[in-house]
Image 1 (tube, rainbow, N blue to C red):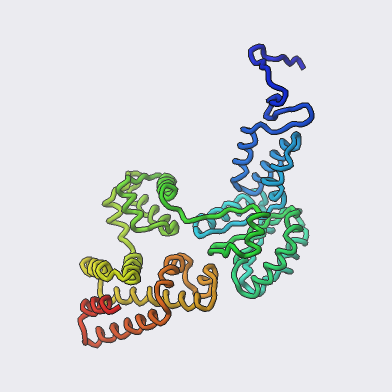
Image 2 (cartoon, rainbow, N blue to C red):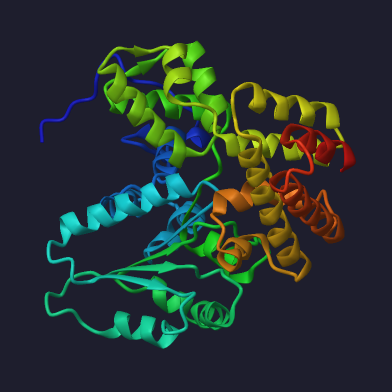
Length: 400
């Protein structure tokens, strides 16, 4: 083969150090991965990417590992990925939804017919485990790999409960199938759940926590860049005050600002012009102040709305809306419902539940019922002319 040793790369090593060559360290009777090679493989294994690409990377890595003593690394990092079960979950439903859409797009690109893309909502009684399993057993006329997406597997109602038990029994068999199963949970999951623990251990799992601090700022910059726009630091702070870490809202507002500026840098005044802080957010802050017994702050926030020209009756209706949500959430908590199931049973958006869950625990049910009744009486007194609207709002805050 006409191979020669490089004259300047000859080194003398101790017997127990082995010989470092082509990514491996060779000893007289065994061979291990070079540390840098091992760390690089472990790091790259952390990105799900598309199922097709991931499978290719997986078999490539396993090909490298089979030439050395790698039992521990294969057991710890790779054996659980041989069966393609993907578990997407976490509070940030925006990013988990985007990841799901990315997986679906890659699948459709590789399997043009799209006939074997199956979506099942386990919360619906018509979708039993037997239906799911029969979809896996049926052979496709195109011999295509199937992509089966399971939604609401962790909701605590009878259909999901029975499905979880059967899924746990069969999980080892499911891992050995050629098909791709995505367990997608957009609501919070009870981490004590047996299936949750099993999927974390056995499946290809990815958690999506709400972005905060640096990662949130980086996400905003990237989204503006995707819209061919930029935002200056002062404007970014004003933007965050309006949207927080609600990425669904932030995405819409970024598109609005980018279209308005048409490639120019977004300034603070642009944000103030186009994105008025949502009144719901400010009312939420008012109720938060009331729950903390900070009546001075609550009155300040209310008068800030009035100074901005907001109609008192509209403010009262928003306060009523927030306390109604708190009452609904509180009653479901007291009935033993888990956090992840409250949005499903209440019909409230998960983001609303997420914001109000903590506040609901700052009041008793009796307190919330009395406050809600008081709001009804204040509304009646205003509309019948018995009391001035602004005075009524002041009295409401002072009497809670």
